Image 1 (cartoon, rainbow, N blue to C red):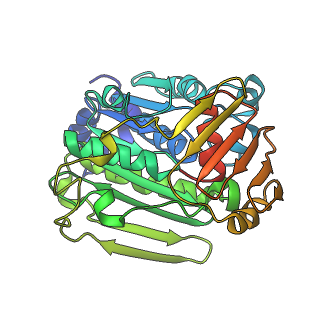
Image 2 (tube, rainbow, N blue to C red; image 1 turned 120 degrees about the horizontal axis):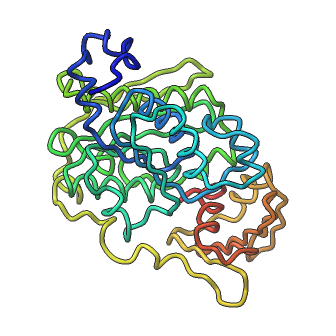
Length: 338
């Protein structure tokens, strides 16, 4: 391996050393999402010398991203660059030793196998549990570790899930239904993002350099504002877990697009996640960040981005003002939470 001088301070760290550094150069990882967590993850892993860093994201850079998404700048906003493209351009300037591959796409059942092809590890930079369970099931089916992370408000959590060693995400946290608490509804401060992604990166580096004996077998959760931190030790996999015990992988079954429909000629996309919506509750949540009008039958929400949401109690949400399914899913995840 050439140019070890670049990594001299990392090589001086005995658990990695020159042997570990050479191992990193042979590894390939996938980061799902290139937002707040994803940008920190990619920055750390590219600078650390991981041989091939691939990432996928469906969104583009907006001004509100700049507070916490460290690879982007105001020029990216003006150009409305896709996040995967802007991040790839920046990271290639940081470390030419590394193969950096940014892919502009929504990660779905249809493409996750291709995105994961040949990778040693998958890292969570996403913002919703629908995608996380898809990653979880795909990783456990293919026996690839999955490094989970989440951040909202001043709270964060992280864990590494390793097939055959730990329970999976689905098994450990249960259904993981959305609470409606997203960065776009209750906010987030950037330090918590950096801390979560750093915890994720540490576990990734341990795994990629074969330091398995110090791999953390727990989920940590913390609130940096209140200075609280908890650690939940892993137990055995539940006997009825469909992923890590029964090997059924429910997120990999069926058509993941059945809940998303573009309404022809109406510049509207309908999303139905199959969960009833309490209109009073959602009106209170959303009026803090958007203009909301409510009737006994629906809620209309005027978004600052220009589009409109219409929420129905039976679980349907219309995203009006776009026919782009990817854009609609981005707005839905941002304000409702997939």
